[in-house]
Length: 250
Ligand SMILES: [Fe+2]
View 1 (cartoon, rainbow, N blue to C red):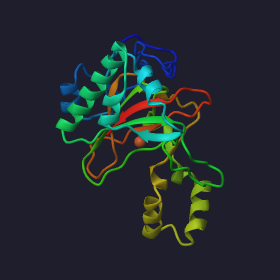
View 2 (view 1 turned 45 degrees about the vertical axis):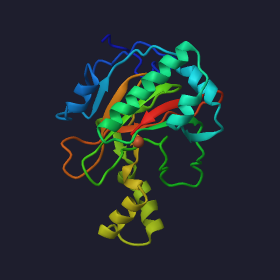
View 3 (view 1 turned 90 degrees about the vertical axis):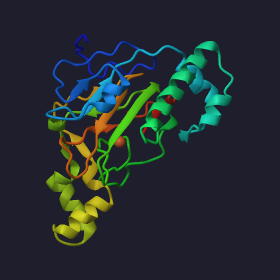
View 4 (view 1 turned 30 degrees about the horizontal axis):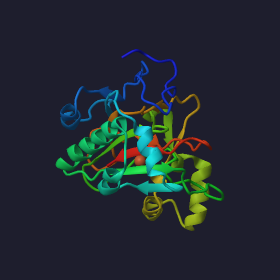
């Protein structure tokens, strides 16, 4: 892989050559789906990537779906019913193969066509939506799998470049006021129930990276007994006029 001086330079809407920034020890690369499946997280690595340059026209699928605003889950039947060109059909076969592989391993992938997000940060102490830096959590051992086929890719943040928003003293004081009690176990439960403890802010000088387009990722979740810290990530900011995202996530 060639190093890149622009970790977020991969946010183009089309397939591109993935360039891994040089000093991102939290990212591990693999060469196949099976290797992605079998490679555990360890040491500094909490994000594993199978880099791919996919053939086919994924933009055509997005155009043909012609969804409304917000997050639209696309069923197998809807995808299969699209009248596509040969290049669009190639893209559809790849999506179907990815879905099938994940299902075979007891995962439940969702194909989403995301045409903007419907949330507002106004009056919110800590945003808890997917465009806020966050970690995914689970009650048991679990990973998050994702691939952006088209549109702006998801973004990641190294753990040392991020701090939990609830650990910011001013924010915590606001939350304590909202809770109306003391900073005790009950308050921790309150933070957890509202997902406040899963959200992060980037530290000064933080260098986010782009998940790129077409690559399949497995990232670490927060759960008891995880060997690594959870991967901090977010959906990309909405830029008016950008085409929808086509995202497979499990
Ligand atoms: Fe997430």
